[in-house]
Image (tube, rainbow, N blue to C red; front, top):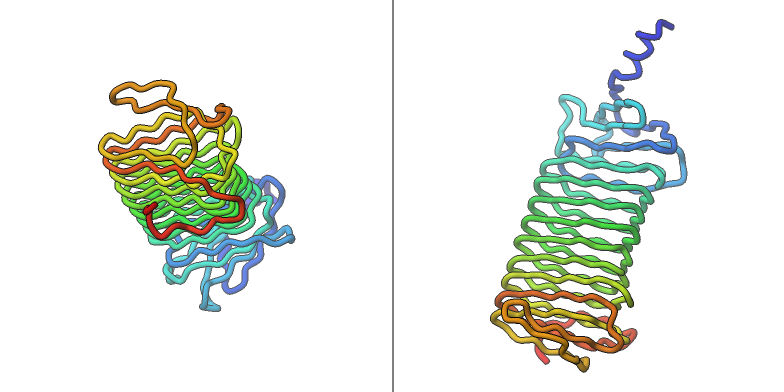
Length: 291
């Protein structure tokens, strides 16, 4: 075959209907673009990517491969809001781009990147590097073990049962971090509460910043902190004995608990900061901040 013709055939999109199977290989990057509605991506042990419409058997896709990039798009004339369900091996990386898109991803070991203008995002059992942004929608994650950056403009963020290093941020929402054993956490909000339940590991680094919300930390002992807490127009209380090591106006109180060594920074402008003891096995979420 003429090599130029072979290249053109490789780059041309294949249009398929119904249950679509495409071979994948190690190092491939799976990209889902321009879908609306639900985008559900799960894993299996076959070296293939399967794409299906959420409900219509005649839903059609365009599939394009360029090097290691394997791209799925809705074909012209298809209902973009129909949504898509994809199954792929866990060793491919994944990228999802959409507008009004509700995303659910499970089981991947490689990098995952998600961008959506509007829609909730659900994440389960991911161990690679994770980068998620939705302008409007909540993010709920379980079982993260790599590194995760989770951001939303308008929505809550909830992470459970995870050990990933976390960087989470919301403008108009609350942050809830439960059952965590992460070595590094940065959580930033504006008007919502920040809650953390879990264990702060020796030598770890933890930052919780909010403008108007309360910060509530429920910690499994032992708790060995070198901490700085600043509550401009609120109060600070702790179940753990603290030894003050410094204070500067506008910079808060510095103190140590236990043997120290774990860095904690908490800051709120008009909220309260409370550190509570959580005995092992008692992880129920408090209904409110009352003592």
